[in-house]
Amino acid sequence: MKVEQISIFIENKSGRLAEVTQALGDSGVNIRALSLADTSDFGILRLIVDKTDVAKQALKEKGFTVNKTAVVAVEVPDRPTGLAGILKVLDKGGVNVEYMYAFVERCGENAVIIFRFDDPEAAITVLTENGVRVLEGDRVYTM
Image (cartoon, rainbow, N blue to C red; front, side, top):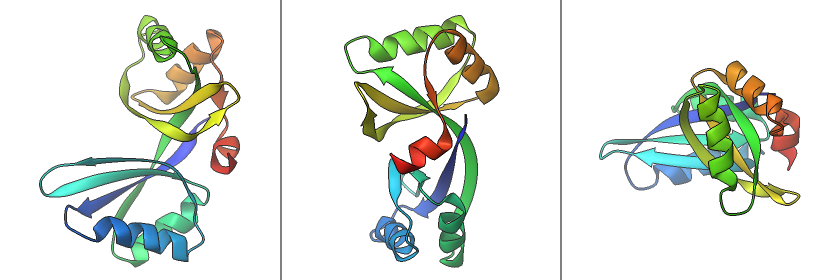
C-alpha cells in the first residue's frame, strides 16, 4: 500500500525546475503530485509520477541527484476537520508525520494527501484499523 516518490535535489537557480520537468516530459513521464521545499542554495522537489524508474533514469542522465522513497497516499474527507481527524488517528496511534502534501486529484468526495512517515508500515496499520482508506500505488499513478 505504499507509493513510490522520487526526490530530486536541485540548485536554487533560474531554469533548474524547468530542466527537471522537460526531462520528465521528454521521457513520457507524467507528474501526478509534487512538493517543492527550498533553501537559499538548493531545493528538494518531491514527485509522484506514473513511471518512477523511467523518471529516475532520465533525471540521472541529466546529472540530477535522485532518490526513491516510500510514501503513503491517504483519502481524507474533503470537509472542515477532515485532515484533523486523520492526524488525530495517527497521533493516537503514536505515528509521526515527517511531511505531507496534497495530490492533484480527488477520489470521489475525498481529497488525497501524500504522507511521509517515520514508520510507514505502522502508519498503514493504524490508518486501516481506524477505517481510513489507504490507496494502492497503481491507483495513485493513474488517477
